[in-house]
Amino acid sequence: MDWDTVTLLVLAAFGLAGLILTMAAELLAKIPAVIEAWRRVRATWRGGDDG
Image 1 (cartoon, helix red, strand yellow):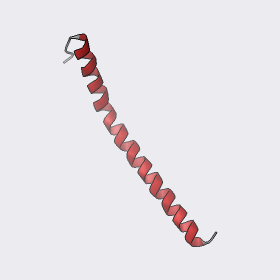
Image 2 (cartoon, one colour):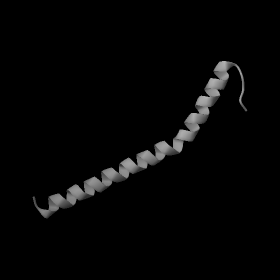
Image 3 (cartoon, rainbow, N blue to C red):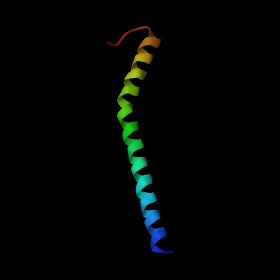
Image 4 (tube, one colour):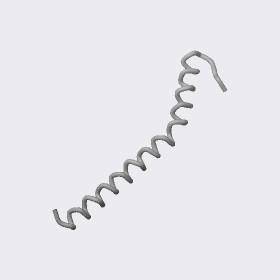
């Protein structure tokens, strides 16, 4: 294994880690909206309005 291969593997690993962290941040940012939508669906299903 030469230094070129090691360098490419390190760059690929950091790129993948950055991608995973970005996707996780986007997912976590959307959770409150999903919970609010679910509450509205439940309130509509029950025939009431929670707010």
